[in-house]
Image (cartoon, rainbow, N blue to C red; front, side, top):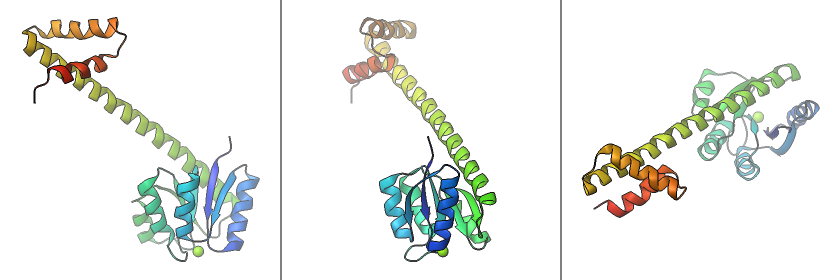
Length: 191
Ligand SMILES: [Mg+2]
């Protein structure tokens, strides 16, 4: 499936140019904006795979627009500017900026930058999912540990016995261990 790109650039000739390069390379330009405010609005409604954003624009500049969008959505952003100033690069680290293009933008410098940006974004997403799932596992284990402790106290049984009890219920009712643990916690936890 072709990647959906939101293109933000206030100079219409450059925007047209970038847009046709993108289309020639199999990308789908799902939205175009000429200022930062419109960029934020479109990003939130369209939720593209990638945003190509000019820095110097009327109303709201590309850096501020990127910050606002990054605060709400996890969309990779490639910034475009006429000059590469250190301050811009520093500031862009605050948001989801994964790439940087210096004008004049050509097919030769833009397409590799976009490919890298999309690849990085994909990797970040995988990493985030891995972290989330590891976190979830820890949380589930904590629930089971807590339920075990409550059973041990309430019935004056060993840790092993408490564990077996949770496991038995879990198998009998085809519930996950942590679901059983939640029920136990609700039942035996005294406030
Ligand atoms: Mg501009």
